[in-house]
Length: 258
Image 1 (cartoon, rainbow, N blue to C red):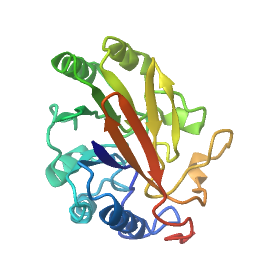
Image 2 (cartoon, one colour):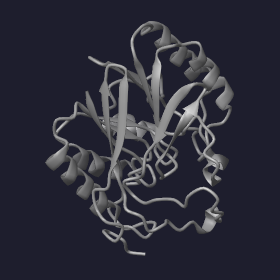
Image 3 (tube, rainbow, N blue to C red):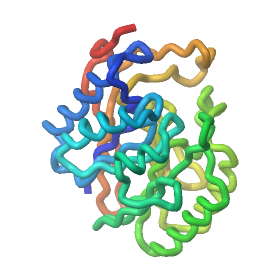
Image 4 (cartoon, one colour):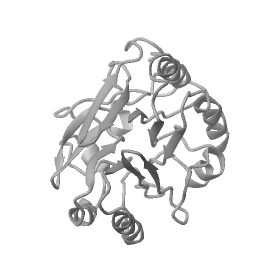
């Protein structure tokens, strides 16, 4: 099974963060349509729009509907849950949370909601952890692939300041399952990989703009993106094998207004 992976679109019809965000998303969709049309799904792991505005979500839906495969939206810290629910129509909800499972021939895609309303920090409170535990039990014996916005690992960058709070409780739930094969997360606007609680994880470059790497210190109130090319991910799942590649769909200069 092949999946396409978009994250951190920060979609807006006007430039922001020094970038023409609409132009970059359009370039990504055009590239996917030309080269990845055989993918089963496109995963979109949060920060869908720059400010959660309903009208922006409506325009975003028109953009994403150009993709040649079904797309599955998650919420990030920049999103508005009700607008994602009402406009982008995720295929399932857990109460007010955008959490759902998609069954495929290679296993289960488990899409989580890590948003803490009104904050950039992520969370998985008890009710969401109970939902996760129930899904792990429901799909016991099948490969499970988790998609979420906030990574469950320390990244050793300033994004740890706005990471997933109480990672330990989340990872304790996962330790009770032998079925979780990989975790895919957004939020940090960089490619990173590692192992947490014995489970491989990957983060992906953003479609919108990239953040400074580890060891770089910056002021959040005066954040400036680094001039690196955006990317989307291509995931291959074949039995016990998982491969993740990043596709640089345009140059660093494309859409740069800053």
